[in-house]
Image (cartoon, rainbow, N blue to C red; front, side, top):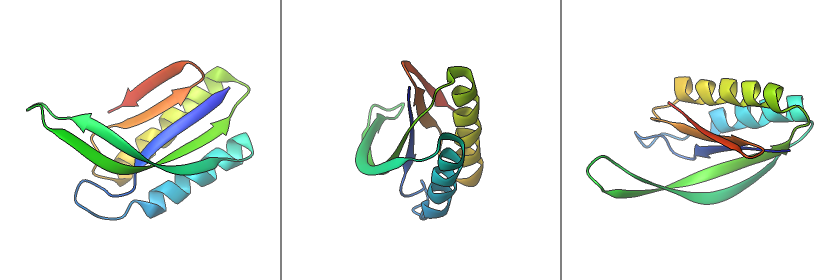
Length: 101
């Protein structure tokens, strides 16, 4: 099943998220055997209704065990939150999507 993690290329304070992106890619490669990464645009609306756009890296891999993949992806998302100034991180495993805050 497909796993997916979306990380903004820049933090909310404008700093580069390249190192945490690299660590996330490495963790997914170590567990799932590989990953594909592509650039995309992420959009979100704040509480005041303002639309924001961020450049993001989408990290995609494949897993065979859903529960183990969900646990790992949640751990990686929490690591991203700890290392950055992000408010939330999007992940998906199979047909399950979550936003970790």
